[in-house]
Image (cartoon, rainbow, N blue to C red):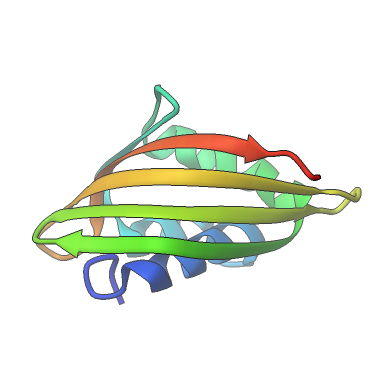
Amino acid sequence: MTPRTDLTGYLVRYPREAGLGDEDPAAVLDRYHTSDYELVNDGVLLDRRRLLDHIRPARKRAAGLRVEVEQALVDGDQVAARYRLVAELRKGGTITTEIYMFGELAADGRLRRAVQATRTIRPE
């Protein structure tokens, strides 16, 4: 499974595997992304090292993760998605983030680059 063959599956599985799993975060990252993968999240560039540095503390904070995909589109080597990531925290509480993602795929179907805009949805 790659983002090209199952973008919705990737959006659901990757955060769970990266944020909650016991597998080496680098192996999880490499399964779905190229070695030169770059993520620009809300204008901040995250390369491989910065992504791995983000995953390790996230594993300590998250008790559960759920992804609700509204739209996921693949067109050639381009992808786009609109979805929500719902994180349940170990210390209590939930953070819901709405994500708009646009990306570029490598020839093997993994993500090479993604740009995301996010917003936190406040509980009502």
